[in-house]
Image: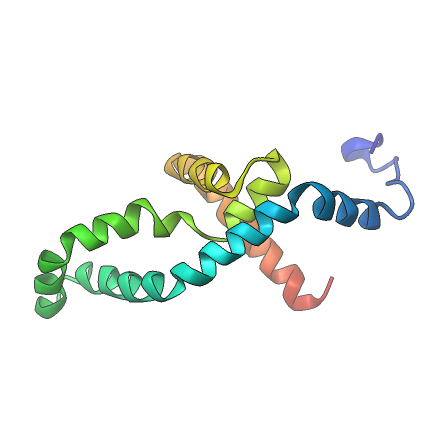
Length: 134
């Protein structure tokens, strides 16, 4: 829109419907493919995420031992499954890239500390808007 931060411009009428059409036309395959990958990976993500959380607790000797035994599984989890989240969907829609490239791009963004804090703020604001119903 042309008004910028001054707020003098207006979005075109029915722009939400146009955005939905563009998403369906150009990104539907990436969205479906990413959804299938997330669905298949969900049991592994939950199990290995729980084990990873247990290994980071310094007062849990059992978690420490399990982490030592499952180190290769946890490395696989950190490389593959931690990338698969809703931030990759945001990158698909913003950058028009396939889901796997978007997940890798999100990982690189989250590696930068100042970008990760901005993304966390954006996710919190999005959650708040969803809760309110806007």
